[in-house]
Length: 178
Image (cartoon, rainbow, N blue to C red; front, side, top):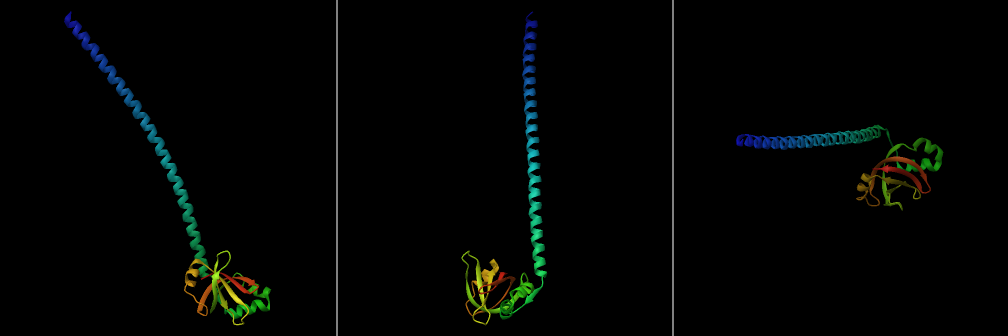
């Protein structure tokens, strides 16, 4: 009987080992399945984030392309050469006719700087003499134009390019000047 008892103990021990190994394998499988599920969820989040990032990049790219097209169109736009005196005189003679001819157009002019400053709203500008001593051409500057104007002094000859906005009480306003 002792041999039978020993075999019984061995069989019981083996059963315990099999149960422990089985439980461990079952636990490991459950852990692995849960990790796979977490990994799949993370992957789905990454894919969603990548899709969102792609959409945002595409929108950014579209804005850059549109801006370039606008800049190219503006560069291709006809620039009218006009003197400060001619533009001022046109507005003094007939504001309606001058608006019809000049308002919204891109002009290039050369003249002498009368003053350099900033408006109460902080917009940098220069005024250009027209020769009549009374009226001026007021040029609101772009960032680039303001950088250039930092080196201007009254009486200095300059050439500017900008878009005619219309008549002011003291002269003519041109915006986006460079």
